[in-house]
Image (cartoon, rainbow, N blue to C red; front, side, top):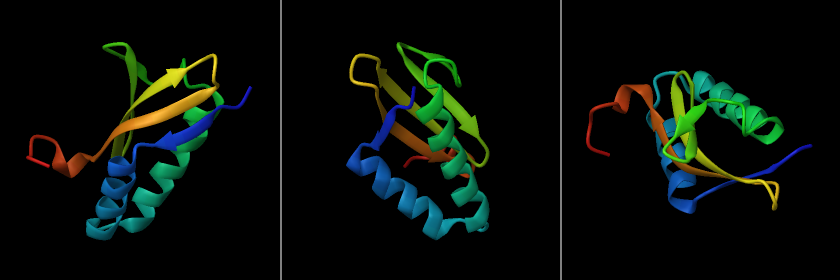
Length: 89
C-alpha cells in the first residue's frame, strides 16, 4: 500500500533553503528522494517512534513526520540538515 507524502509548506521551503545552501546538492537531493520513497512505502516501520510521530535520518537530512493510516497520508512536519544540528534555525 502506497501513502501520499506531503510537506508542511514551511518545511518544503526549508528543504529548498537547505538545498541552496548545501555544499553537496546531489547528496541533499538523493536523501530527500530516498526519504520520500521510504515513507511513502512503509511509513509506520521506517525510522523510529518520536513522541507519537516518526523520525528518520538519511544523511545529510533528517525528518520528523506524522502518519494518518485511515487517509494513507504522511506529512513531513520537520526537516533539517545535519550541519544545522544544535544551531538556531
